[in-house]
Image (cartoon, rainbow, N blue to C red; front, side):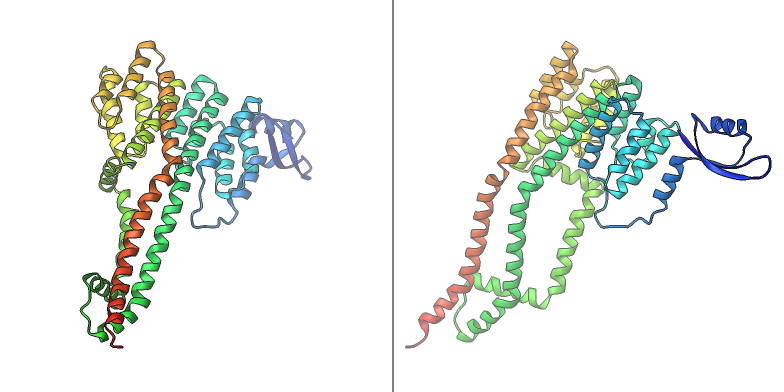
Length: 409
């Protein structure tokens, strides 16, 4: 590695430059052998990190590192290390190529730590918001097995798979969400600006108004006279939906309800079981003991019902019970197919291979559901919108029709 130095000779003449050495002590020895007395000596990388860390960090809304960024970084790191590039140099080079400033700074810090002798798992573990416990445990396994490129490839495969499913779900849900937001905006505009003018005409006509019209009038009056209550209610609901699920109690409730919702509940169960099987299989194949792998997986599922189930299973497996028998007792969240494949894996000694087959099955099921999500939601959405529009039309047009038919010729 290269060291930058400032030094003086025996006559007090100053000099500076860079020298190659294996360590700081070796660099000092080289300078002394050349009759130079060092004033300052530092790694070239330290200077680079100082420049990076001294940059003004722009605080941006939604800034951060995406799963796609981490997956791409892991894949490229695997290729470079497999090509015999030292880990610190490979990480540093990837930092130069990264466009995400926040991620770039973290990569430079990791590279500097690794160059200083820190283990990879500890260096990456400084940033748990970017590198999950799954990622760190895979790195620990790589350190033990010495097979870092292969394990990084597995990590990248896993992250890319998770990213693909998440992207498909977001894409499929975008259309119905946009339609609902547009309808709500139109409804609010009608209640505030259109209906009050019609109400005045209808009341002046002296006609007996239909029940639907009376309901619309009440809603319109409320929107006009108590708009601040409506706004407060909307903001309250949004805040509740954002922050309450982040509490332990709220997440327990929301996660329990989520897997019981018709149509979507079975899909979410398939998704969580696929995630369980994939993470568990990857960790076992990397050499982690079953109980440690279960503990890591429990925090990665994303659903507290499954997390609690896996923790209970881990505690019983530690006592010597068979994992297939234990999981079989939680048939509300773990399917018979999952349990059967785990049992086969235990008997054949190829648990990771059996779990890989489970992953393929559930991923196929989730892909089919995600691809057909729009066709499932659209009929429900159309029927719901038709009923609401029909109610509005009936409430507004029916009394107008009555007025027009009773006007004397």
